[in-house]
Image (cartoon, rainbow, N blue to C red; front, side, top):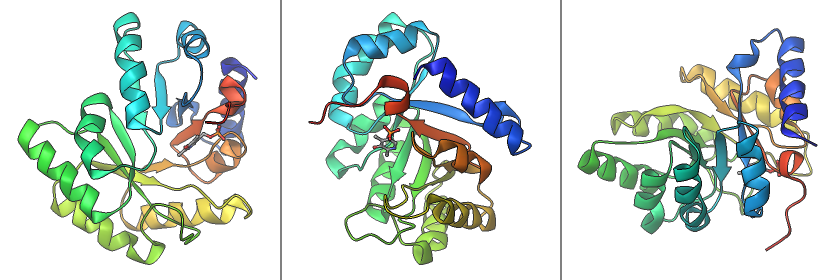
Length: 217
Ligand SMILES: *Cc1c(COP(=O)(O)O)cnc(C)c1O
């Protein structure tokens, strides 16, 4: 599938949901993709990309940024404390703020540097033990904690369990965001971004549908 097909599908999903197509941002998830595939998407004019590993982002994106103007990089994968500073330097948004300790580290570095990417707080809507994010019952307190730290909280993010109906998780995330006065909803991937849009997604994270299957690492 190509970038323009995905863009067309997003526009159609927005239309069906009575939403403006400009209200959904497409994050092209370029993790593990060979540079020539990423370059092809840059050459088509796309500028918003997502990476789930800070190390990989650091090795790829400074070069692409030099070659292409206006690149916006979103970090979407779990963060270790010792990678937070680098993630903040590299990115315009972090979607995987998944625990108070990371929020505190971000706040400390933001105080020091005077700059902070947009933040999305990750909620483990499926309450899966192996998955990052705060539990739904802890989400309101986590939002409040991040606001108390003066962090720029743009919204919430979730990754539904693979074997469950994603709609329930998208609806839950939207409900938690609404009651906390948050507009940003980072949800929806290659298999379910249209559904996510119908539940209010503002940022969809689409990888394999744009770039083709990833070779596993
Ligand atoms: C890899 C990844 C995606 C994209 O997944 P696809 O199924 O390839 O679209 C989205 N979100 C996160 C957090 C990811 O790690």
